[in-house]
Length: 43
Length: 229
Image (cartoon, rainbow over all chains, first blue to last red; front, side, top):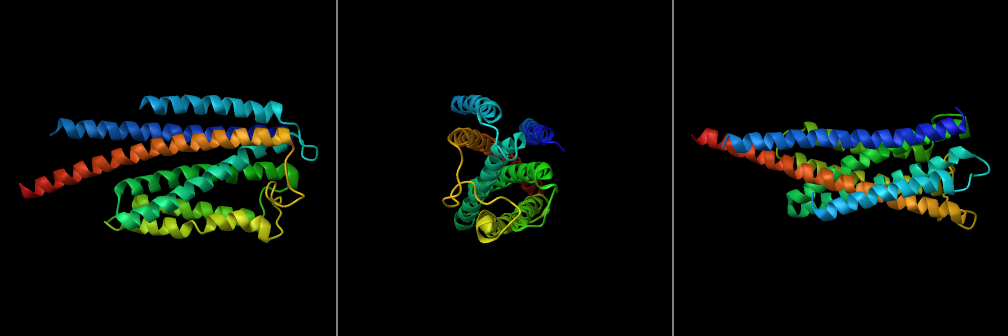
């Protein structure tokens, strides 16, 4: 692995990991909001 | 999201763009390693944010055990998860950096091994929170958070205590350590940007944990009413 490939790979890993985590948080947030709304509606 | 939160997110994004520019285009190329050394500007700030998150988890765990405060427990959960994300980045970018410089992806030296142990401790913390049932889960998680934090200063000190494959301290390591001023500026900008990203992620995850607690409480209330009827 050359230096420039390693540099690009490391930067890609850093940003993909953070973006995946944000995507996971958004998905989880939507599920919880929906569940809260369902609970309020069924009261 | 509150207006202050939006302003902080915009500030963080601008800071990230600026710090990335500093790391890739402004900081000089290191003479021995060449371009690959620029991984330093992401690798070290990620490790810093992971350490800060685990420290927040440590404090929040103590606060929870002391006061049984659910907000402290939510903060502990949020900080551990964000810490694991950044620790994962450290463990992935490190070997990518090591391969062209050392000729190997991994070696069981003190710094690398203790970092892997740290990651395993906090992954087990998250697994415990996710799968353990019963009222004592939060107490057990807090205890694990407090004792697990012991590994953070050990990770920090390993390159001072042992001769490792991992480089000796770049800063605070005596007279022979230090960075060129342009490199130091780029590094500090990235440190600040990554710290802000860590704060944003922790705040979002904390809010999510509070909402999940709210849902859980509503379910418990419904179950109780169902039993009483």
